[in-house]
Length: 106
Image (tube, rainbow, N blue to C red; front, side):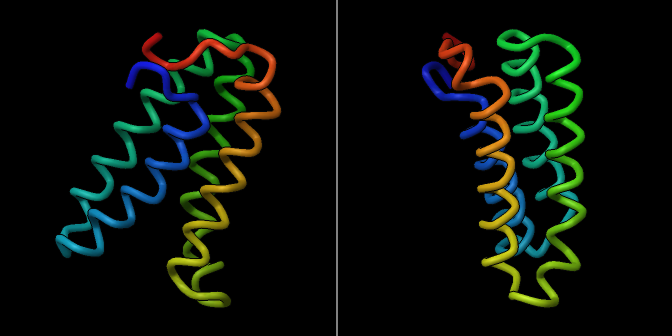
């Protein structure tokens, strides 16, 4: 993951986790992808902006995952996943990636 901003990792985890779960029809496998990307992103957030920001962004990541489910009932599954992934990426950029341009794994 060298050279990838933490927000991109987090957004990719949300999209990738849903993709894996949908196409394999194994929700736990999607959860593994979601959790792995979340852990990598959290490490990047902690290194860039400290424990407090990492905790807040990690909570936002989990809330985005949870919030995508009811949102999907209103706007559809893929639009919901992309919306919450974009929100997490934007929050990450605003709180960590923009201020500390070093990247995950760099």
